[in-house]
Length: 291
Image 1: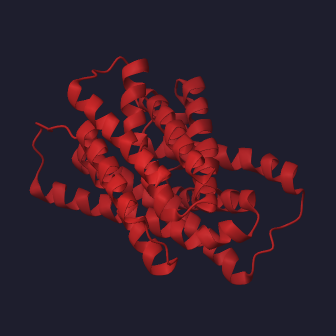
Image 2: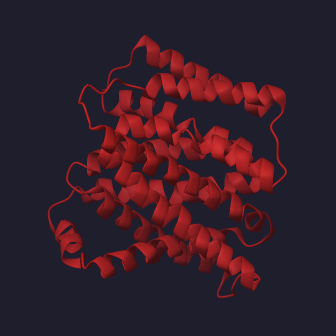
Image 3: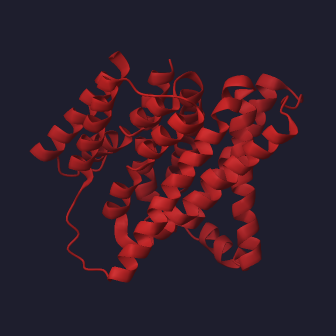
């Protein structure tokens, strides 16, 4: 079930990315990210009340801190740095750098959770990364300065490293305590930190002006539901029910799903190189799951 949920998360996230691509034509990344996180928190409140009522989770004091810090690290700080990398060096280079997420999770899981992939699962891991690299890498003909490239690469690597730290540090709590509370509190911590940053920077007028201007709200709302609420539940459920190292590898298939959905819904080009890459990625998934 954990493996299935991790792949389902990748597919849901990929569909959300297609919707975000449409939404991002008029709504800037920070405002879009803030909206989707706040909407996810609003949806998690009735979800938690329905399944758990008003009883608080049975965390220790240390576990409360870990869950909240995990949300700040993995949602507020990491997402902000990721968006900064996008601005500095473009989507293709940032997307390639983001593939470092699963190696970071595997390394941290080996050190802190005593997990390890089987030898053939490492082969599956290489196939997944190779397939995603094949379908996502594009030559960017627009030159950027060395300083911007180095700075962007630093932000991208740091962002995926923090995402990995955030998920690995909260995995033991996911396994032992109320799952939905952990999801909701991580989202709350991330959204609250972003709102605090907006207040400190005095950007309320700028943010609200974007929300008041005409936007494709049905697309924004549905993308936010998929990308921040449903995919977050599936993502953390996958980590709860299988090893973090395996879940991280399976999450990488989002890149292959994005290519397929972009071809189906956005009419983007599908060529032999991309088809081979998608096939390699899913072959790698089969190896990881079936070994």
